[in-house]
Image (cartoon, rainbow over all chains, first blue to last red; front, side):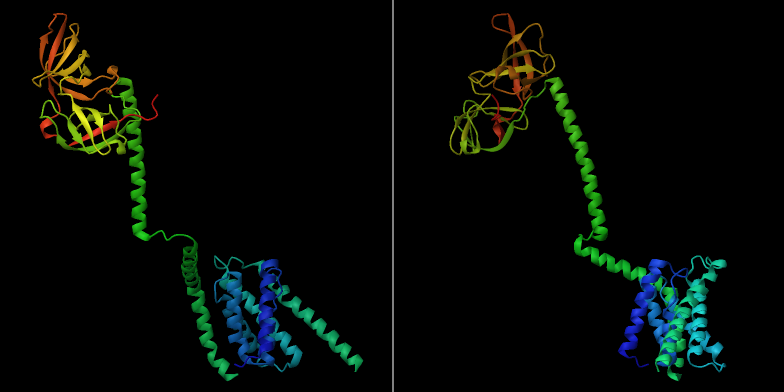
Length: 159
Length: 248
């Protein structure tokens, strides 16, 4: 896996922002999930190792920062990204659509797995509260889609 | 793509291992690092040895408290009984260098003098009882007049009967107690102690034991024969009571 400094810096910044938001807004309740879409994006556009090694190390850092059991975020993100790849491997979606669907599925699976792995006692957060995972995942993706659309629209008009 | 895929099981396994062992590892490493960090600022308690020492110190503190209480009670009892009154008196150990003028009439030369704050009139005693009084003080030596020396008078009191009198030695070296009131005749075997009423000796120092009771020369009092408690022939080390310097 070859890692450029810019990508590594972007991931590190994302980890820091994710950590700050989770400690201030509350994990799995209000803090938007930014790290998984970032890893998915890098895995799709730079190197597929970002979805494995990148997920492992960034998840480990995040767990250590947020005092979660080490490896929980790593495993959930690796399996989430892997699940998204497996589910969408047979589709013909391309480009931005593929990214959004990958990111959404990976983030949802990752968060659900994280809840299952990290909750003490196990299954504590199972129930209606798990529905909060969806806005946590979808809101940043929707926001990104809106921004991307606006940028594309502006560029097309200027061209 | 393929190389990353090959590493996927490794990272999944690593993650699972971390989940299972991570908290224990982190807490262990964290505790160790915390202890090392704390060791920079605080003294190492010392493990088992330190625990043993702390326990020993605690036991000694408790014993010390018990001894202090006992000393306080003893002081109170002595005060109540009027038995010995040696307030603020300092004691000095001295060694007998030699004797002068024989066993009975002579004095003892000690290896303590004015450099050791010995002054004329200091009371000298041995483990068994009263020895005498300091007469002459040199720079490094002093001379003690024993109570067996004729002319040395000691204000005394009998321990049980409370009869008071003067202890002195006759020319033949026999110790006696004279001017004892007939109203409270002492018994043979009673201890004779010093009395503070003479103004020289403190209360309660053993002088000797009553060996016989005789009628006085004028028939108005009684005289006692006293066996000295101290063996003056084997006197090696004595104690000099230095007068309290803050006394009026």
